[in-house]
Amino acid sequence: MFAGVRRILFDLSGTLHIENQLLPGALEALAEAKAAGLAVDFVSNTSKEGRSDLLSRLASLGIEPEPGRLHTSLSVTADAANRLGLRRPLLLLSESAAADFQVEPGGADFDSVVVGLAPDKLNYQDLSRAMRLLLDRPEAPLLAAHRGRYLRSGDGLLRLGPGPFVTALEFACGRSAQAFGKPTPAFFESVLGADAAAPACAVMIGDDAEDDAAGAVRSGLRAILVRTGKYRAGDEARADCEAPPTAVCDTALDAVRLILRDR
Amino acid sequence: MASHLLRSAKGLLCDISGVLYDPDGSGGRLIEGSIEAVKRLKDARFPLKFVTNESQTTRAGLTAKLQHLGFSVTEEDILSPVTAVRAVLKERNWKAHLLVHEDCLPELQDVAATAADPVDCVVLGDASDGFSYAALNAAFQRLMTPAARGGGQPVGLLSLGMGRYYRQAEQLHLDVGAFARALEFASGSTAEVVGKPSAAFFGAGVKTLGLDGAAAVVMVGDDIVSDVGGAMAAGLLGVQVRTGKFRPSADEPHPSVTPTAYVDDLKQLVDILLN
Image 1 (tube, rainbow over the protein chains, first blue to last red):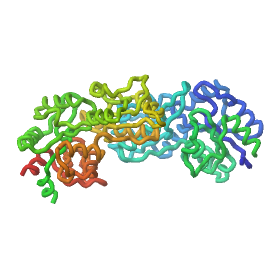
Image 2 (cartoon, chains in turn cyan, red):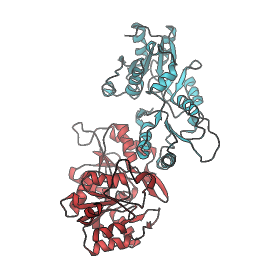
Image 3 (cartoon, one colour):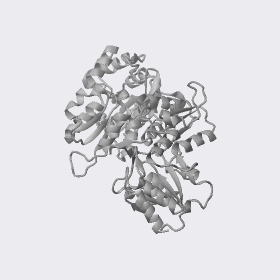
């Protein structure tokens, strides 16, 4: 099942940790993967924390990505905004996430809208303001860090992701957003690089049947869905049936051991 | 040809916001000629209901507001989604988690669940500043739990309309439809619309006029998709006014809705209907 695997992409929130708690076996999973000579990448759709805050949080948990091995939906979106020549995005982002973006001063003359997980900004007033901008300037792109529907927070409850709010703006303005995080092909390409052979050597491990597993499989990787974090029984049946996960395991540690056994 | 259809119409469903007056955060700003137009219809005993998707206020409150502006209307003339949804919930014996404008809470008191009760549905209205991340999250969490009525039924989502945006105090604001779509996307459920542009709502409107045939009823409104398109899809005639949230560059012509007619305002429509 896992012949030829040289690289593992680990989802972070819900797979290795939930907020400030490591999930059981997380550090062992990373250690065993590294000891077996596999390359380890960390991927995250987190759009609430910028890179700097995220690295601090991970360090306090004992997770230290190698340079260039931490890929977030924010970093991929910020790169895309740069490539598109967008200088003054209206950021519906937390302060921490906004730090990942370069914004030229220019008052209220915005050229785009960027939506991430920002509980303070995802409300009637701020969303209406973004809508007015998009209606007044049809050429201004609507960018989304990702379309995540929800995640499970530390208290065990489900919390809305940015996806529903992106949908609200798309509906109100009659246009489509471009998303750059999982499960878009743009994200996996950004992580793996341009080498066409790269996806076949990589496995994605994550708790989101659609964004982690199905997204990876559609981009040519293999994927293991884990039953932690936001996972709810039967998720694999409800996700894209054309792109089922290669396997389903209870934890990230079980997933790594399955890969090592089956290589 | 359009004039012919309009002249033989037997009833009128008349949108309020953007046709009678423009909301502006306080009493509202009259649209010229509308008071006289309504009076002419009433004097001629022309079957008439005022249809609103406004769920920011009660029917009594709305009536008072219109009377204060000078309109000769009574509560019975008004067809609102809040009134409609209360009737639906009572008929189904459902309890609801409410995310609606605070002014509507009194009218929905006897169908509202407390925070501790399990619920049968979430009711979403135009909550305005009530649409905080926390409030939307609470509604979402309800949608992800089983319904009070048991049998593995999912908690329903009733939306008091599906409008995209509305105009208030010179600016456009997100309407309930945008937030309904957000919760649909998040939870995988499908909203049942109790309000424009649902066919059921327009159908109820035709019945309240005491008429049988939708084709003899005109709906006049400022939202080309929700008012005019919705009504025409339900078999009514649809007239678009050039007041309210009408946007000339986007709405005339419109890529998907071809109204029975465009008129400058309600006054112009009533001139056609009564002459």
